Every structure is written in structure tokens, then in C-alpha cells.
Amino acid sequence: MELVRITKSTGSICLHNIPKWLIKYSSFLDELADFKHWIAWDAQTSPMGKTLQPNHYGILFYAKDAKKLIFNELRYPHKRTRQTNMLAKDYGGKKYLLHPYGPLVSDVWTDIHRVKHNKYRDTHPCQLPVHLLERLILMATNENDIVLDPFIGVGTTAIAAKKLGRHYIGFDVDDNYVNITKNKLSNIESNSKIGNSWVSFYLDEIVTLRDRDWNDIKQYFYIPTKIQDIDKLPIMLKHKSKVISSYYQIKNGSNNLFLFEDRKNLKR
Ligand SMILES: C[S@@+](CC[C@H](N)C(=O)[O-])C[C@H]1O[C@@H](n2cnc3c(N)ncnc32)[C@H](O)[C@@H]1O
Image (cartoon, rainbow, N blue to C red; front, side):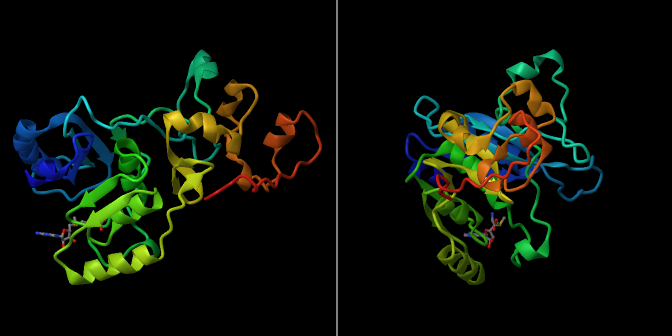
């Protein structure tokens, strides 16, 4: 109730949990705010007795006021097969209609994985991946907006907000988690950007961008001239293309080896 009260009329409320708890929250949130989505995040949770294998967390997404809501359509990269790097989905004769970067984000998120590797984890049992929060923040806020997480844990929401040029407020009852969060935040810069657009990166790839930013962002990618070719020739960030590949030989219509080094316009 308090969360809804303090949210701006253009703002939204996101609740992440297992379905069992989310249905309880939604029963009273429905009275206070406007339901927009149940986002299914494909990530394993623990079985609880006689159940199907629980394979998703839910994220309830409510608008304080659906008519005033800030909402940005998002895109994520086309899925590709691991072995061949071809598009995973068969678009048949419709490939020429594809967006060069990737599809619009739906309410099922299968491309963001839990933080498993100890190297990337703090000692928190429920630490979320930063790029999960970045996707929500890009969807529901604009630069300089305020993001509040009253259960901040080891700071994931605040880190995502800071990286994306948003302000943040976080609470946690556990002093240890608060200290970890403060420490991590002191080493984070607001620079998750390409050109003038805020984007979410993971392992040096853009994993979420706003649809309306694509016109500005596309100059930072090599994109096949014939869009059908992205089936086998993934678009590539120019600053990463120090590699020599047949893709660029094809794109340039020559058999000459081609080495790219184009970092000058890239702000990150
Ligand atoms: C599910 S974890 C959040 C993890 C966080 N999303 C992350 O990625 O690090 C919930 C956090 O809420 C904190 N917490 C529990 N009850 C609280 C309360 N009443 N007020 C503030 N924090 C609380 C816990 O200490 C825990 O760190």
C-alpha cells in the first residue's frame, strides 16, 4: 500500500517473487493500481512438495495510473543456435521483415540467466542479475527518474539504476547487505550508454535497448545490407569487430581481409 502511495502518477510498481506469493499481492494491488503484466522470468525455483517443476519467477508489473504510465517498448537480440550461430527461429519467407537487432520484448523472458558463478555473486541467497533489473528500469523509467527498492539486498536494483543514469533509493534490514551495496555502488559509473542512448549490456553485448532508440543506435553496428542475411550473419557492434571474419568480407563484397577499429563515437 505504501509503495503505491509514494509512487509518482507516471510510475509503476514491480514485484518479483514465486507465483504462490504474487497471487496474494495481486489480490490487494488490484484495488490500488492498474495491472499491466505478469512477466514470466524463465529461472528455476525450488520445488515445494507435490508440484510441477517450478521453472519461472513472476514479476508483477502495475501502473500507478495506466493512462499516465511511462512505458518504453524494448528489444532484445535474436536468439541464435549455439553451434551454428544461425537464427534459432525459422522465419521462412518473412526474414526480410526482421528487425536487424531483435524482436520486441514479450512478457516471457528466457534470455536472462540467474547469477550462478561465484565470481559474480555476493553472499546473498537471492541475488538477481543486474541486467534483469536494467530491463525493467529501461521499460518503466526515463533518465533521472527515481527507482526505489525497499528490499535492496546486495544492491542489484540500485546498481542497475545508477548504470542507467537514474536516481535510486534502497533499504535493507541487514547492515552487512547495506555495506556491500554501498561498496559496490562506489565503484559503479553511470555509463551504460551507446552514443546518447542508455542500454543494458551483459558480457559486452547489448541485451536490451529501447525500440525508439534504435535509429540512433544502429550506426554503432555493422548490419548486413540485405536484412535476410542476418540469418547467418549476426549484426555486430563496430567496436568489437577487430576480428576478421567472412561476414565482413561478404559485406564489403571483396575477398580482402578487413580489420575494423572504430571506437571514436562509442561512449560507454
Ligand atoms: C529477496 S532479497 C533481495 C535481493 C536483491 N534483489 C538482490 O539482488 O540483492 C530481500 C532482502 O530484503 C531484506 N529485508 C527483509 N525484510 C526487510 C524489511 N522489513 N525491511 C527492509 N529489508 C528487508 C532482506 O535482508 C533481503 O536482503
